[in-house]
Image 1 (tube, rainbow, N blue to C red):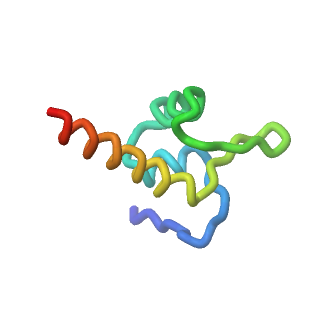
Image 2 (image 1 turned 135 degrees about the vertical axis):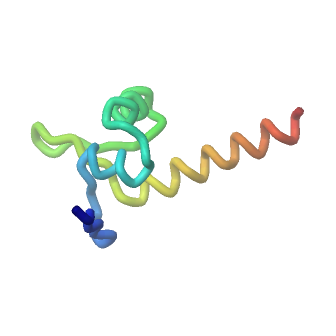
Length: 71
């Protein structure tokens, strides 16, 4: 079964965000709870803004780059 990803969505479910990051749903919820990954609440629903994914990855890359220079 092939998975179709709609890159035009503004808000992603936690499961969709986790899939884009190739992490598990539980890890994604931990990132949200810690504030590392931005999310919004719509009523009772938790959504991750699509642009929060590349922002999170950029911060990871920056911290990795900083750590590598310090070593």
